Length: 323
Ligand code: DP6
Image (cartoon, rainbow, N blue to C red):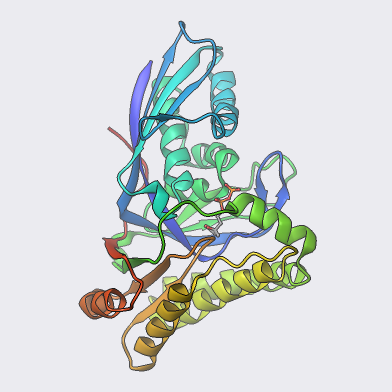
């Protein structure tokens, strides 16, 4: 009754920000993401009758705080398998969690897939996506590789709120460079940030209202491999999310000065005809998405910005794998 899974991290081009149901972790908006090849979580799950509660080790450290969400995901799988057995979970990221890169997406996707295999449930990827969503909204997308769309859904039980693949990574092999501008954990998690935005930001309503058009535009751009259109809609979605966040009370300003320098540098490159655009999440790191031909130039420009500590490089990755 044990298994190991590897799931990759992902970054949203059209962002998820806001929940319509906190208990089921249902998003207020859909989202579109790309799965990253070189940033992953390896998660081993072992069900053991000697345990009285689930036991989670993240990068060798016992985690008390996250284990509520882990147990919530495992409870769904336990019910399907008709077992009450508790599990020992050992999860390791190959990228520094303290760098402020989302590890909950890859972590929960790997957890759900490993537990499914350990219990021999053989659920399909859509069911895994729905269960991973309960752990973290972005984790629903990390079940799949390449370009992925998360559906907002309308059902109150969340059965139509899942991710599905849009385009294989081989069909448009974009690259991503991650500029690390600060180390250390962020102060306000995405989950609580978006909840505060929804209740206090005067721009939250406009964010939700204008969001479906961004999803349509991004989907069309991906199907047409239209880099410029994908760049425009992605940067706008990112700016809109941050506008809603900044106008939250108290404000959520996730950027430092170097973050803003990176945004200007990426936009200046694109004005010069280099196929690159930026996105950024609930933290200070900048992700530059580019065509293969631009990787070296983008890497050099970002690495040269004072205050950029490190630049990670990756292509697009596959969906979750049992190892
Ligand atoms: C800004 O998936 O971390 O990265 O569902 O509360 O776990 P929870 O939130 P999470 O939020 C990610 C928000 C984002 C944008 C995105 O990835 O779509």
